[in-house]
Amino acid sequence: MKFKFKNFSCEVDVFKKDHDLVIRFYNKKLEHEEKDICDLVIVDPGYGYLCLKFKGEDGLLSGYLDENVFSNDDIVNAAIDFVEKLSPLSNAAYIPHHIDRIQKTSYIEYNGEY
Image (cartoon, rainbow, N blue to C red; front, side, top):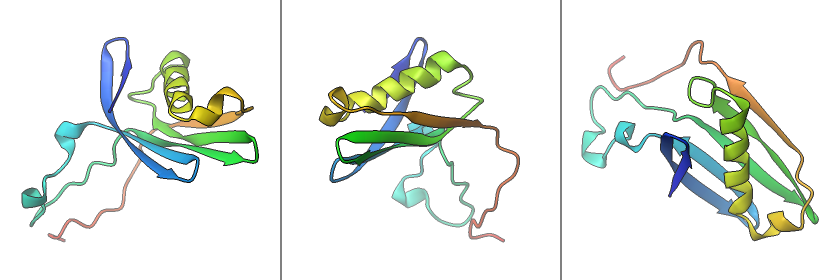
């Protein structure tokens, strides 16, 4: 499945539990194949996650997106619309949202080498 906005597109993974969803936005070209997972592995965290959680008849949408990719309100709103359309419950639900645009500043990593 792909998320598309103007000239940008990326893959998404959809994780479901009951009516709740977690959506991961990422570049498939940066993903490792099983045969590639040995020695020095640089794991790409993707572009972010959005979580749609239902409480009764209403929902809550939250998460974070990489500001280098989701650089303005239009693309973030497109991602929100994309996630809401994945759930049939969204049409009748009140869904407030809070999405953080983040800038990566550092990381913690274990890659098999050090």
